[in-house]
Length: 248
Image (tube, rainbow, N blue to C red; front, side, top):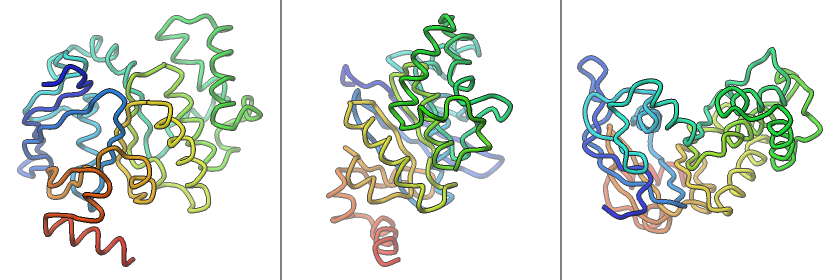
């Protein structure tokens, strides 16, 4: 194993009842890499992503984060690991009864024991970074979907994570709001953030990913650079999926 593998997955499997959702996946995510996971609905992409920080418990297999096996950790130990793995979901998951700035400072104050002054300073800087500094005192419900997702990204960054996990971050958005969220993600990638992104946005994946992982039927069937996977897919499953996307 290379020394700079931030996440190592070995023989990962997940069953729901008799249904094999994930089948013996072994992969590595290296420091500074941007991985885009693509594939048809029902392929197991979101389940795979949620296993990486053990929001889903695998049925078998190992997951290591910075060399530490996380599948056997207690909840308390896991929460320390999750501080370093920011997660952005499809549906924002902001607290509706809190203002934008309150959403951002909550975890740094409670979990990292930052002073409220320092947490607020950092939060305002992050809101500026995602283009929403003027929305600090607004409530999530008054924001567009794209704005809420940018707040969700800023909130994840407030914990200063080492890795960002994105679970189809634009799939709940109106088409005209997708670009503003992808622009923030692209900037993060350019700054060297390690990212694993489950996405249907193929233009983004082509432009930003170091590696594409094509997932279908519960396992990663093909991987390579965007050029390799999009322009020269090897497996019939990948060829079929990519031709449908290109022609849709």
